Image 1: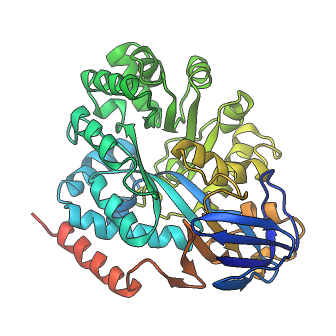
Image 2: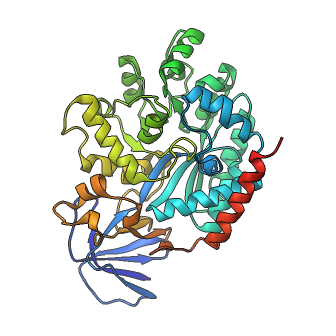
Image 3: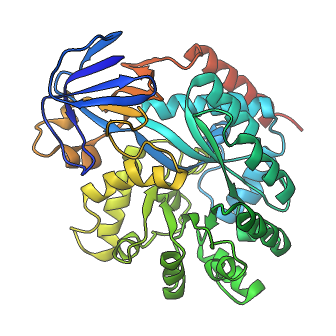
Length: 420
């Protein structure tokens, strides 16, 4: 058992306590409260710092680390078709494993304890989680060129229940890359297994306009009409929505996962989060992939999520930090269906310790506001996943020599770029 003491706790109600202890027994939180006697394998003095439920990155493409800062300064359609898709065609499963581990190192150094990962080669991310101890929910990425509904079903059966840090959800890349017949088959799978379906949705104006030209309706309306939304799910981006789209998202209990840094960088627009929140639609946050962001920092996403809403609505009180922190720490867990949504006895021990003894956290007038408005990855002093410490004070415990991992990734990226 591990004892964290002399710590502040971000509670289930997202308030900050003082002078509490948190004990981890196995892979679960065993106790939160005042000091009492116990026998421990290790005792960690948090020195007044704050423990939070780790960040949930609810939309990412982990292995795309190999394209970080490679395909920049282009709109989404050109970015994908001219730069990303050709390079991804050269990627192997072994490559994806290496690049996924690099992403995991970035995740844990930034306090991220689980991700909703959509990418090629789900077996690579599954193996990366097994080897590093990280937690992920894999999302199917079916489209006209990669995978199939049949393979999606095999993966759904294969990856659910094989280990306690991994799960798999039905999903496809997007309407504009996926034929209607394929979408109908995925909807049938959703009904067969009573399972949610997740996808990119309404990311750009062009995407929505072209969908209307093809089908006479928006992507959200199309997905609803063919039954893809009947069991809920998560829609990534949701920047360009109609009033009817918003009604359907609410009615079908869809979680909207916003990706503000990527949407800014690709000039896709700003999602109407304030409106969606007012309508009672659950909101979560993701980084998107490191090729379009280019960082995997939830601190940056939280700041942009609130700042862009203030700008969009011309209201400085829009999307307050308490709401944003809940989006980042709790709501992504609901999207991934993981039992790590808060710090509570019996919950999975997925936690991050935020160092308040840094210039950007002083003075401590309001901890939650400091985290959202001032925080950065440099404030993460420890990240624990499933009861195991994977990062602590600049050191990684993911089964890899970090410098050797960097070098292997560099060599693989160079080979891929130089392959004819």
